[in-house]
Structure formats: C-alpha cells, structure tokens
Length: 233
Image 1 (cartoon, one colour):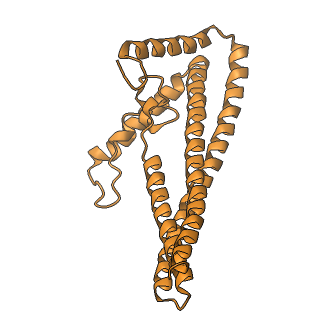
Image 2 (cartoon, rainbow, N blue to C red; image 1 turned 180 degrees about the vertical axis):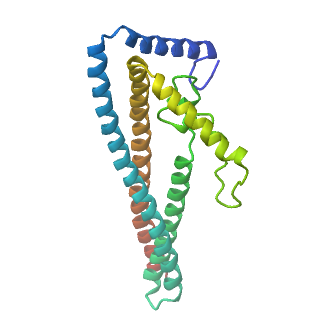
C-alpha cells in the first residue's frame, strides 16, 4: 500500500484500465463525429498551448526578476557597508538587502527545481502522454541520438542511424494512423496539456507568493533593524 495516497499497485492498474476503456469508446463514433471532434480537439490543443506559453513567460519573468534583485541586493550590501548614512538607516538597509538576497536565492532554487521536475504521470504506460506524434519520448530512436554539444558524437551509429530509424518510425505511424487512432492520441495530448497547464499555474503562483512575502519580510526586517539601532542608548 502506498501510504502517501492510499492506493496500491492493483488499484492504480484498475484506474489505468478504466482510463483505457474510456479511450476505447472512441471506436464507436461515426466518421462524422470523428471529424467534428478531431477538429474541436485540435483547436483546444492550440488554446491550452497558448495558455501554458503565457504562464511560462510569466514564470520566467519572475525568475529574471529574482536574478535582478539578487544583483541589486548584493550591490546594495556593498554600498551600505561603506555608506555615509545614519547608523539606523544603514543598518536597516543592509538587513533589508540581505533579506531580499536570501529570498531571491530561494526563488531561484525553487524555479530550478520546478524546471527539472519529472512529471509522475509520464511513467504511465500507453496513456502517460508520450505519444509518438507529440513527444520525442514516444519515439525510442530519437532518444538514442547523442545530443552532446561539447565533444559532439561523431559516430554515425549514434547520430545518423537513430535519426533515420526515428524518421521511418514516425512516417510509418503517420501513414498508418486511422482517424480513430488520431483522435485517441489527440485527446490524450489535450488532457496532458490541461494537467501541464495546471502545474505551470501552480508553480507561477508559488513564485509570485514567494516574491510577495519577500517584500513584506524585507519591510519588516528594515523597520526592525532600523528601530533596534535607533533605540540604542
């Protein structure tokens, strides 16, 4: 039993079977229904792709802001250490810059962890989203290509050969794909994009909350540090 979510392997397998059975219901659609739904799914794929791209742009924007604030904070600490300001003001500013620098470092680490996160649903066989037409994970030959930029691979067996095998695999699947199979793959892609969009939204909001609270913490630290020095006898 998985204590984290209360589901054991058998229950997960049953859920996968239920999902696959739902996908198989597509086989009962008429050609007209297939055409209508395939067109509709294609439009929704574009819609969710656009949403995710926008959200990712905002997340990257917060990441860039963290770099900028980190640089400003470090420069500010250096300047305040040599500044000719009142002791209470200099102390408050130094601690405020330290607080902001620490918050920026935390934000940068969180962003990197988010960006290297391995989506757990990708481990689901057949229905995890890695379809041959949408993700390179679905084409085993592509993953055999050695992508090193430094000390690049020269052997054709590790570069050209897997490329050609992957091309044959891709074209063969495309030619043999029926309207029914196309809709099945597209629906899985659409759902994957919904879940992916959920992750990106949650990650962006977590970074936004972190930046908001860092601002509050910086003000509190400034006031506390300044007051403690100003009230010294």
